[in-house]
Length: 129
Image (cartoon, rainbow, N blue to C red; front, side, top):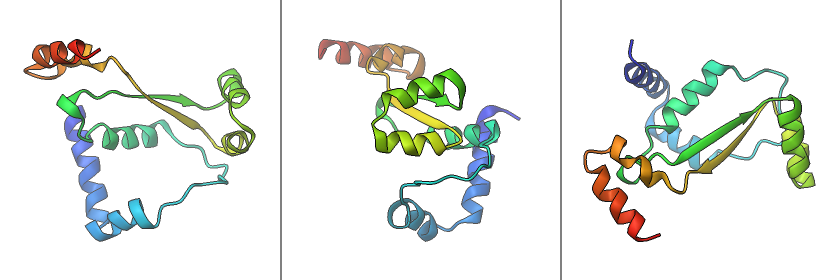
C-alpha cells in the first residue's frame, strides 16, 4: 500500500468514526490545553498518523513549510526544558513527548519540486525578500 493510500485510509477510518459536527466540536469548542499526562507512551505509529493528517492541510502553493521536531527524553528533552519558562517547563516535563513546531521560512526554494509552476512562484517569492 502506498503512503498516500495509507494516509487516505487512516483519514477515512477516522472520518467514519466521527461525524462532522463532532469533529468541529472536538477541534473548536471542546478542545483545551492538557496540563497533565498519563504514563502511556505515544507510539511512532500514532505520531505518523497525526502527521499524515497534518500534511494534507492546505498550504500556499503546496509549500508545506511545517517542520516538527519530536523530543522524547534524554539530553534533548533536558535542553528543551532548560529553555522553557517555568509554567511551560512543568507541562513539558510531565509529557511523554513534546512536539516543537516551526515553519521553514525559505520554503519557496522547495517549490520547483512540489508544484508544476513552482519555479514561477519561487521567483515571485524571492523578489519579495
